[in-house]
Image (cartoon, rainbow, N blue to C red; front, side, top):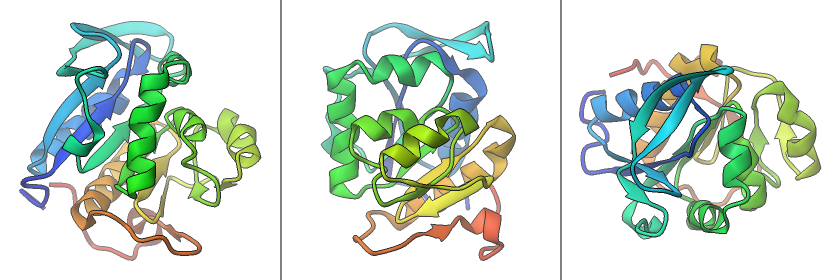
Amino acid sequence: MANILDGKRVAILATDGFELVELTEPLRALQRAGAQVEVVAPKAGSIQGYNHHDKADTIPVDRTLEQAQGERYDALMLPGGVINPDALRLEQTAIAFIRHFVEARKPIAAICHGPWTLINAGGVEGRRVTSWPSLEADLRNAGADWVDQAVVVDRGLVTSRRPDDLPDFCVAMVEEISEGRHAEAPGGRVGAAQSGASSANMP
């Protein structure tokens, strides 16, 4: 799968409090597949990563939300961490940025607490998703069909539950971004890494 994403531009949207491995592992997977990836955040400089409740490494910000335009990117990735998505939900520029990908039907990958911001951007109603278990009620109340599976893919929307799911999540994310925009269609499908419908391996 080397260079399968050659020419694709992907934004990773995060702020202070993101789960470190949920940003760095997808970032590496995207870069190995040939994508050009930019970390987008509400502020310039760097953002603080966490390992669960403990501070970890910081990650440099490539572009602020004020500088970023959704039209520049082919896909969006949303890492988790409890603090990160909860803070982004209060940033109207962040919600507007995410809404661009929802309305343009571009691929979106969100893991753990990442789907929280999708609720505010109108991105989960009628979609099949998974997440960290504590988000189940929020996602169901927003109209999502929540399931407890390692990775779920529904028309370009890729979701996973936790860091342990990252291998399956990254495979499905790369596959969906390589396919590009998805037309509106009823129903969803479980991700290939979960269902065994694909033999694709990580790059």
